[in-house]
Length: 610
Image 1 (cartoon, rainbow, N blue to C red):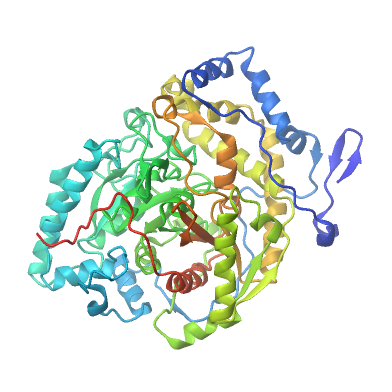
Image 2 (tube, helix red, strand yellow):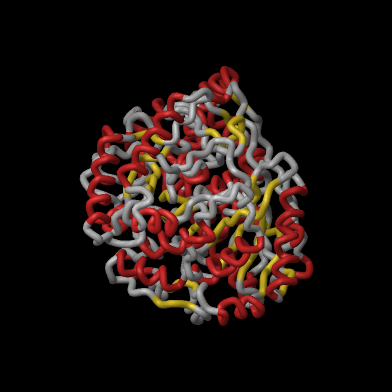
């Protein structure tokens, strides 16, 4: 940067020399607060005299004021992701975006390897643990090993038992056992008549509480949102799943309004990590990730505005897909007007992610005009040619960033994956540099804060802000402190970050990072009643996930093993715009290399015989 009086001027993009870029480890300056101390802090934060001083101090300590108000950014603002034209992906099956979701799902089946029931239904006690897949359910139903109605009773019992358990496991915020039974009975009848709608018929799917699923209310993890926002129909993505015959079990718990990374929710209770009930699931899609990891649902639908699908998927040992901005229709979600959030599936395996993705994809009318999506496609996982195509794949790794983790267990395990991909498939690992990561994080905070304010500012001003949890109120105070000029500057930084990533994608096909910089953090007992603010943990959990949200790229978290404490570790694959097929293809190959999984402590076998 060059000095211009008191204001610094950023070097124009075309003059940046990557050889001089030095990675600066992220250091967050903020207190860790829980319990009554946290309550007192909120009183200070919301006081008209002291609050602005506290916020200003925290912003200054974290260099936000320097970036937003003391820096001249020469590039024009970019308010939503803008993508240059992209070349076609190889070894893919094209989908009809305007076709019926059940027809797209049928096409997805053709992209998968052949299903062999003998290998999946082996009763040998030495068979390694794995979750039941969607095709396992379909086989069980078609073979009359179990009916959707019988499976539904197992699901209902597991949900109700979890809600009564000690410690409390509040997987769902809204749940109606009779509604689940009704859907299951209809599905059972279709199977009895030999006429299931699709492979998703009878598949249990949970919907995050910020996405409409009629007749349930949408609260976004709050206690009051349903009073000011009624639900009259399914969200677009939810209706597509319903049209495929899926059984929608209810509204899954979440970090309130998506404004947190741990999954803490003092309104309905904090969801526990199925692998270690004393630890967080990650958030904000805490309930969706936990209910899939627990085996109760084969899939869940979440939202991802700052890693909210990928973070809990990583911490819970499941697969979380964030699609390209504009790939899925956001209609019917509380974040449908924003520029960083998408809806995406959480599943136990990559092939199930392919199936659910095929069902829910389809851009809105406005996105077809503004971002002009490429034709959707799926990886052809059934051909030998597709396997061979992995050998030409170039994987980008920014080593200094890659290794900036809380525990080397995370980076070492992810490094092992890259080495194994090179040895097994011939993938080339290419060193890359991505400048201005801290500026990108600041731009994201301002952007997601603006989305939040545009959706809920009127309700907060109307007094609903006092009904939010304390950590949400902390975020509200921060978001309200940003000015219009802060927002414009953040969008200028957004354009610079887009340039840096696109330059990296000229050298590589996929950018690879750990999904999170740490495994599941411990839940402080004092945080259960009033929540907590721990920005150091948040920084580690969000370290690698921001880019795909701010810039709209597709990304996926795939499990790659465990740390020394037995906690899951996820690897993140970031693709070029519209390259969902590429990252799904690579994720599937990684999954085959790390097939062995540990059975979660909290687990339900839905397909068990009576």
